[in-house]
View 1 (cartoon, rainbow, N blue to C red):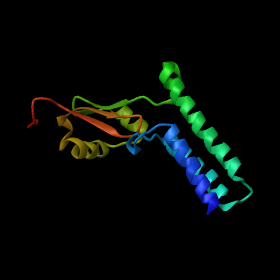
View 2: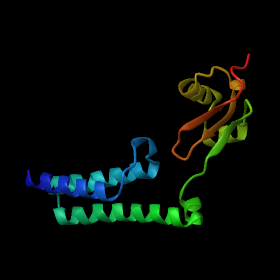
View 3: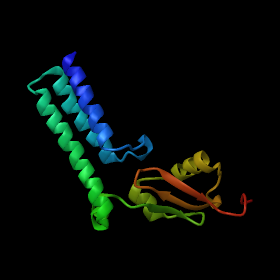
View 4: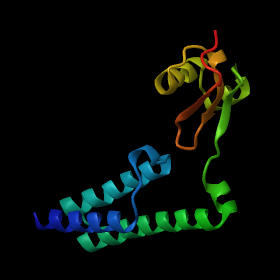
Length: 149
């Protein structure tokens, strides 16, 4: 129980120190980082050839590298361009951009599903822009002037 308490306190402290990010903003890399932290935590909890100090150092290093990467991306735009994906336009003025859809292995049904969920749109011609965001979500901008008939 003591090991679990120590690991819990270390994780709580590190999560509080590294800032807040909602689950909607978690990137693929953030998810992988959490898996790595989970592996280090698991080994420390079970005591399999891994001390609590080693686990704390591994976890702190991973969080520190992640925060350093965030900081560099904030301060150096070229670093952000190298490490982060950019938004990709999938639909322009009601027309699907086939090359973009093929590149991301998406279909028009995927876009229409996002349009129904976020904007209540039913047809492609009601969409001004559909953009694949770096998070993987599809943002929909409807055409202005009310529903298209």
